[in-house]
Image 1 (tube, helix red, strand yellow):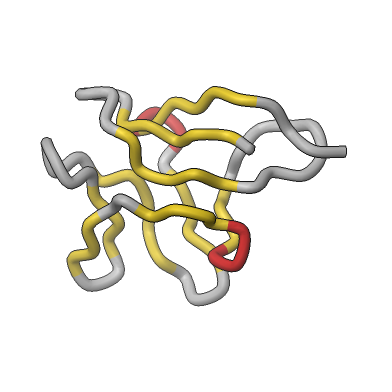
Image 2: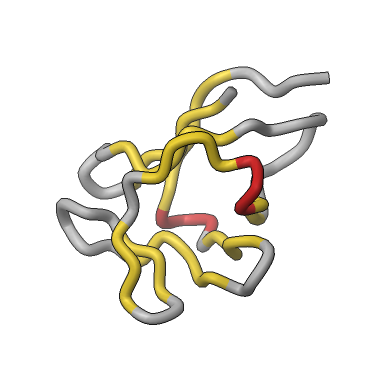
Length: 76
C-alpha cells in the first residue's frame, strides 16, 4: 500500500494498492483504496491547494510526475 501526496502542500491524495517495482505513472481506479482528491471535469486536484495531480482517463488516472510524491511499499 502506498500513499500519494501533493508535492506542494503534502496533503494526502490517494491510498493506492501498487503491485510490482517501478515508477508510478498512473493509478488504476480499481486499486485506489481511499480517494481524497477533488475532481474538476477530467482534472484530479489536491483538495487543499488545487495543484493538478493528474488527468482522469477512464480506467486509470494519468499522473503528472512532478506534481505528487509517494511513500510506502509495493506488493509482490
